[in-house]
Image (tube, rainbow, N blue to C red; front, side, top):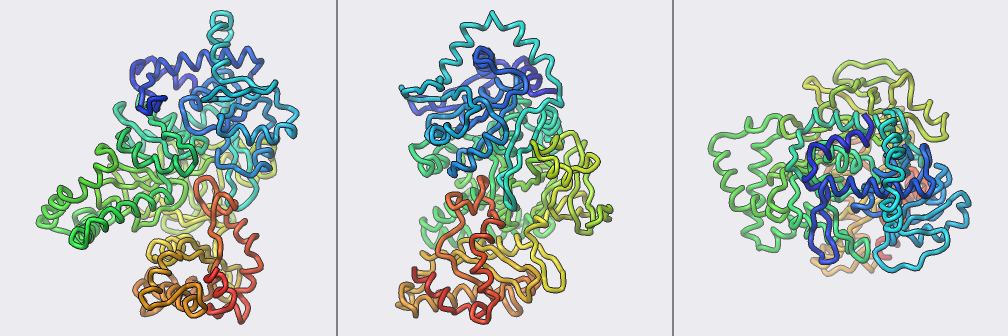
Length: 633
């Protein structure tokens, strides 16, 4: 099945269902039905035909999530053209130029907000024939530019003229035809163009049904970038396949204002589920905790008691109720009525669950949302697998795992020689199915490294348990390697340090066959400043900076013998030395990718000299002049 066939099937079955909820000039959500979106797709497709776009042509799509994004992609796919979706978070012009050039795009569809980026590099892109602008104002267009609405009107005018040819094109498409060239954000290396076919997507939509049932009344507010495979497959095509609807985030004047619109839009759109990544989940949790704290110590104490009981009763979901009794169940119902239900109202009142992807979710974060009645089900996938491989779901879940495997997908855990390992043993996750990419665009070497005999070698370490749940432990390339060759995934320790310590904002562990593990830490200075004030100390003084460093050291020591968390991790991997950074990991400095994952290779490259210093006698003493200086700055 192709994507146009999937869409046509749903339009026929659900013509009057709402497909898109989007705010108009009145700043109110308006409904756009399946049939209306189809009409626009047909018109825009014909308009693209008039511009000369043919089968196999590549078009870049650089826009915020909006109805025009979906219409543009579908129109390209109806013509057998290939969409190259680009992240609006790419601010480095060289990165943008690389993706457009490398994919061989001849056309660019771009929103007005992103247009300046394209105009700045257009002289370096001689192959570009036309720029189609999704504009919201009376923009003055250059000679090689045309407005989205003009293309739409061009299609309306020529609909009858091209209707037979248009129908012949989309009806003759094959599942193996390329739909997208989706560039990796690259946590360890330069971006690669992932070729995903129509069948990759439609197969993954079918596989998703084996995890979670999506009734047609379901709706999701699409917070994640639409160009990302997680938002793409789950947020767009899985909803479309089931006649469900998607809501669009209200765009602010700045990216920060758009982020601030999310809580308001959740209340207005009343989604039944939301796709999330750890960074978003942590922000939701912080806002909830702040709201509780603002209500005073009595409410905060009651809330903490409720959480404690819920954690005990719920366990890891798989064993829910086994650690409690009938009285606990009654108490939880009361807590739910007076506390948790009020929190859920802040999420629109209809939210049933989150689906977490993009990176591993800390189990404490999962337990928190499970307790308040909006479970966050961890899933796992890769852009190369379109992306879903596994997920927890309402009817079957284990907190801390990455869920159970989708149907019609083979998965095995392999050792370094490619031999399959038994259940419970750790190795590389290797998968095979119709959702696996065709390969990397114009990169046969990289393709052959990860695709062998139809099997995708993910580069992720994990294991299967006896109940059929997958546990993902992290990237092989990010592993800590001890001086004896032993390997360990750092993600769990990093997440624990950030989640369980108020003074650590971000952290990256490092060990490349060294005697001990080190850490780069970006501290939460506002918290440290408030703690120091309790003892009349100022972080801007040497004495205050040293005291702040000792607070951080004490937090790390909690994971060592006699510490509060001594049993959580093997002690050899707890950092013995740490360096204080004066700048955090951000998308702007390219140390975070578009899904807010840390780009380890770039962090190591940027701070290479600092890491080397941490393995010197001076650097191993955490109260060193460099750390003091960065703490004061």
